[in-house]
Length: 283
Image (cartoon, rainbow, N blue to C red; front, side):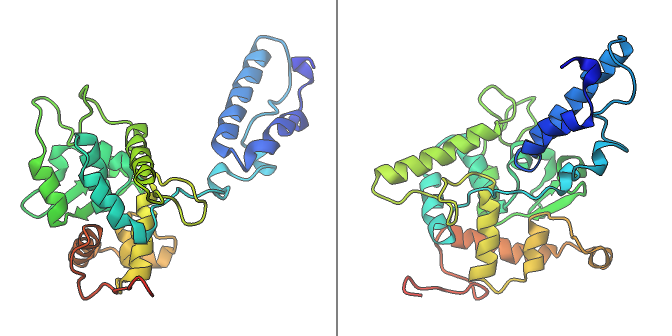
């Protein structure tokens, strides 16, 4: 096929098979096709409208990438396994393992933990204040730190000229793959020791760092009396209801502090607070 013969249907024939399953890749591919065809037009190899253009063109035929439903969730450690997983993690040395431990205790996103800087930590008030520029919902997010989370921070070394709380060996940020690698090693060791490993309840895939947020959410729903909306605030999720978002401007910081202490106790398999429902192994 000659470049001047490419039409909208030809572009769709390439994009449609992967638009719903590999949306990000398909969106990038569309952009590259558009750029190539634009160059071809300027170079005199074709004329007319660009068939890969999004606005007033493919936008009318394909769903917006952000609205395409996700088909797979991040594999999460099962609630009943997470204390055992956490105990195994604590036996590992290194700043990367402490970053993963901190991520579990705060239910924060991996990239927020990996990019955390010392100026974001308020030791006096027991807070981690993540600036809007570093968070998905683009709004400052205050994270109440449990005693265990604070203990991790206080025990960490500080390196002159490096603002990162959890710097990688060469001084930059840890990659997401580094923390994922730690998760894989914990899973493999548990299997080698005769355990069942740490796999997602539904997909049966080995758990990943981002899945710890789902574990936290499941714990709130299944094992506690804490309100679900409090968990959503803790996870820094955007409020989908515009009216509710307008009226609920507080971040429930002190109530969330109690919840995060209870979560820390659960991870560490300590005595359960009153807000937490005890489920026996026979339940």
